[in-house]
Image (cartoon, rainbow, N blue to C red):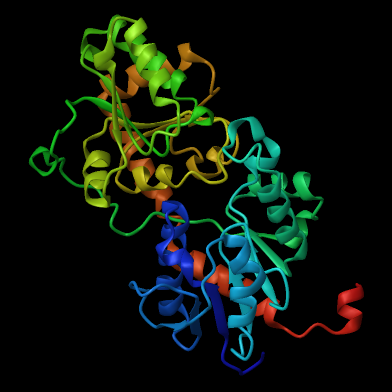
Length: 378
C-alpha cells in the first residue's frame, strides 16, 4: 500500500437506508473522509440514483429483493474487477464470499446480549447472518468501548482485534435561539427532550415518572413535559397510559419522527436532554444535544458515560427519585444549567467527524496491507 492510492468500496445502499442512524453514519463519515484524504478513491457499490457525498463514484450492482441476496450475489459480483484496496460493510452484515479485505462496522450487539429488548430477538436467520459476518470480517470497527466488550462477549472475538472509532454530531447542531414560529406545533417551555426511537430499552418510563413527580412537587415545574422525537416502536401507548393513570396526560408529548431542522430547534428549546436508556452502543443524540449546549441527564450504564464524561449528570437508570431531583435542579437552577451547558459544548468538541474519518482511514490502510504468512500466523 505504500505510495499507492487507497480505493475504498462501501455498500452504497446505506446512503439511502431507511435506518436513519446508518444513513447518518455513512453520509457523515464519507463526506469527512473525502476532506481528510482527497486522494482516496471512494466507491459506492450498488448505490441508488440518489445523491452521494462529494467525490464518491458509483459502481452498479444487480439488484436483489433481499439483503441476503445482495450479500450472497450482488455485491460479490459487483466488486469483481473493481480493484478495491478494502471493502467497508457499514452496518452488521457483509458479503458472504469473495470480498476481502473487508472491514465490518458493528454498532452494537443488543440483539445478542439483550435480545428481550430487540426487535430481532426471534429472527434466528438474521442473528446467524450477523454472527457469520462478524466472524468472517478481516477487521471489525465499533463505536464505543462498551460495544467492543459486548462484541467480545457475544462472538468471542478478542478485544484487541476490534477498533473503537467514536462517532460525532453533525456540524448543523449548534447553540441558538428557540424559534417557535419554525415549528408547526411547538411544545410549551420548559420541556425535557428525548430523541430516538421510543421502545422498551430506552426506559422512558423512568423519565416520565420523574417528570410527573416534578410537576406535582414544584410549582416551577408545573408545566414541565417530556417531549419525545422519534419513531414509536411499541412503547408509546404504555407511556401515554402511564401519564393518563397519573391523571396528567399533558406531561407527555409524542412527536414521532421529525426533520433535522425541527430537531435542531427542539434541542435549542429544551431545558435538558433525558437519556435513561439501559442499552446503547453509542447514543448519538447525547452529542447532538451537547453540541447545542443542552445539559444532559443520562443513565450510568452502557456507552452513555463514555459520551457524557463529567460534563453531564449520570444516574442509576431505574432510580426515579434521583431523576426527579436532578431534573428539578437543572430546570430551576439557572447557574447549574449554565454550567452544564458550557461543559456540554466543551465535551462535544472532543468528538468530530474529522476525527472519525481519520481513525477509520487508519483501519482501512491497515486492513489493506498485504499479510505475510508469518503475520497471519502470529
